[in-house]
Length: 166
Image 1 (cartoon, rainbow, N blue to C red):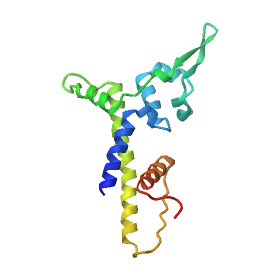
Image 2: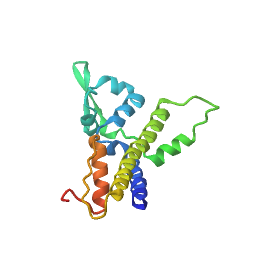
Image 3: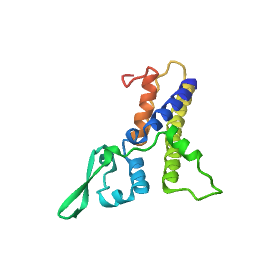
Image 4: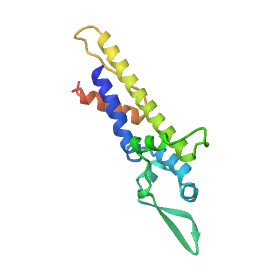
């Protein structure tokens, strides 16, 4: 349980240190573009967020004076938990409504915690089932989930000395 607790903390902290880079599927970057850089989001192809997140530049869908504009996506970053939380702490609900930026930032932070809670729940359930098995028996664990969850869970177990070799 202590190892799982440490893993959860480290996993969330690491992910939120650089949300854009950590989110391999690009969902958070897509949401960030849509809410904070709407003019860019509306003017580029956003059908493949995973690929979009990796691009240095994205070409405009429209021509301006015969040329296509390029947007420098590599410079668009999502604030880390530390920077973003400092930003959110300045919000005064009595003075104004939240901005799109504040709302998407809060949603990303909450979603990362929930994402990792799914992983830690699966890890703890696997440990519970394994411990309940008869002593010295071989246990096979099958997890059916998305690629990101599967990879995250496998990384946890490999960090504990397990492998796919049996």
